[in-house]
Figure (cartoon, rainbow, N blue to C red):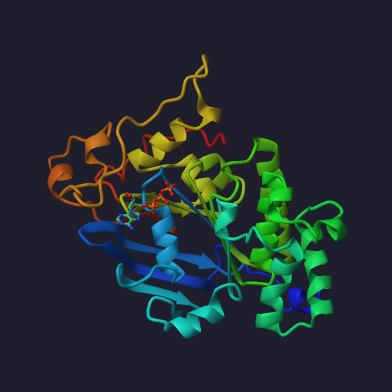
Length: 343
Ligand SMILES: Nc1ncnc2c1ncn2[C@@H]1O[C@H](COP(=O)(O)OP(=O)(O)OP(=O)(O)O)[C@@H](O)[C@H]1O
């Protein structure tokens, strides 16, 4: 890898105090829709935050807002998202362009959002490093080859001339990761990038990203609806529901001591915890409509343990239940939901 890959010191402990991205009270409104509702989280330098929740829980909008990818207007974004102390929410578009691709790399589920169908892999992989890092065509080509190798593409030399449609789904995802890493970003944001892939390819890509992260001291935000996937990569997890972080904890603690009824429901619906006949416990119902959020707890209508009259009329505040463990439920203080920690 070129020298830029090694310029950072070894990452501190993921739970240490060195924070790269600090998101505070982030909110997104589009017309009457209250899509993100006071989300706070931090991403340690060199650490991985997993963001998990069902479809429609606000994962993508949270991360798009936190990284300055939502057009405002029409959306109204408030709160702060501090990248090394600089607020992305308040940043002007010109400065944001210097952050996107360079300091933050993105991988999305759909390759068509990142890969241009009429350009070769080489053209796509060399453009940003030439623009952002001032590399010559030859240097950028060498770097592209190294990146393809780093993300596990066999015979990278011949792949440089390929167009996206000539690649398998797994290869396209790997090229997208290479593209996201092209300028050696400090933060990689991955929004369900392996969801459409088979389990084996998914596991290989997760492993590859973990290795790249360790060698580069990079931070990662990994979004998934699947707790099992997040367990394979994250060291801390934020569970999202109705555009709120309803529980946040270090990975082990979330699995051994989940406090929110929604987190427990997500755990019970993982394939690994299926009953003897293979049946999954799904959480009946669906996330709230952001145009009509309930007055009380956002999970009220689906909650299997609701009973406290406050649940229907008051939003539960964020309660600290451990040194790095918070929960938003009037039932968060209860420790009845032990799952034994099996992942
Ligand atoms: N432009 C928009 N205008 C109004 N509502 C929107 C808009 N974009 C998204 N939403 C709504 O915001 C909510 C959160 O969407 P978001 O895509 O962030 O969820 P998600 O958890 O990432 O789901 P998925 O896994 O399906 O992508 C959803 O109810 C969605 O319908």
